[in-house]
Length: 189
Image (cartoon, rainbow, N blue to C red; front, side, top):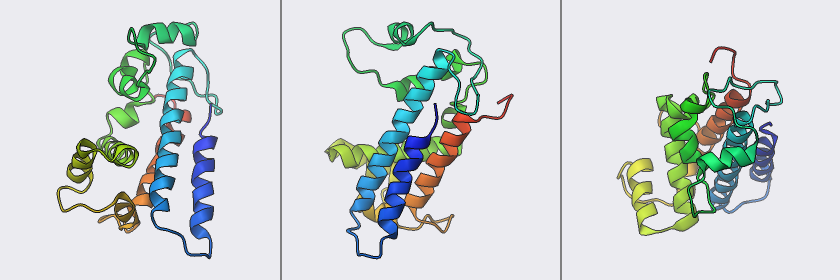
């Protein structure tokens, strides 16, 4: 288990954005969306593999409180009856501390900085994906802080008020930091 497919997606878009030809700025929405989807898959894959005792490419595997025999056993516990979809992000957020002694997902559950960043990214992803009134309201409130609507690509291109980098870069760096932590967590948490 590794974060290479997340990093490869980031690299692909860095190459596109570094191109000398003029690009359509709305591509930032697509890039962000594709990277975030791969990040969510990475989180799900890590959760599954750690739950059944598999190690990351760095040899890290958190000590488990609950030991599942295989993925089928895990899914019998986490899957709601009569549904085919398992929202693993919600399961990770709500229950990972019950699954692992030194919870590698605490970075997204308990670290207020990363919790805020992930919530913003999920809100942006939801608005890009759905463009519903509900998703727009959450985007305006949680990300734009009710300072007037702008399209997600405009937000992503703006500079973060404290970091002097674009929000796009800020979010992508956060994804890289979180993914590296989850697969190569220092011993003892």
